[in-house]
Image (cartoon, rainbow, N blue to C red):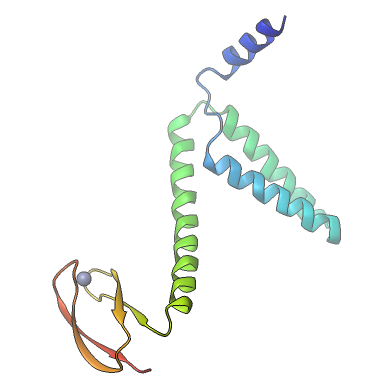
Length: 137
Ligand SMILES: [Zn+2]
């Protein structure tokens, strides 16, 4: 009996997309909305919760796995930008006394420079271009 139900679920899910990281992101979003709604009890938030829930199920059951994979990559890229910005800000605050961070104008790499006040010429280790940097304090 249990085996048959399990087999039916496997057959049903065959060729469907299933769960990925975006699913968990949506789940967290759903829980956050639920908690917010417990305080404000707004119709708009309830509607949004339903939209998130339907979208979650739609993605799990979708047969267009390529498109779902693209969505997943896109959202994760945006999230990674936020988390890396947040991590860099924390690092900047922690190393404020000893280091400064500057972006290379040529390759956009973030450089980790020792804190020496004044004007300096910096050679980017990534693209080997020289550029001027001023560290005020
Ligand atoms: Zn560079």
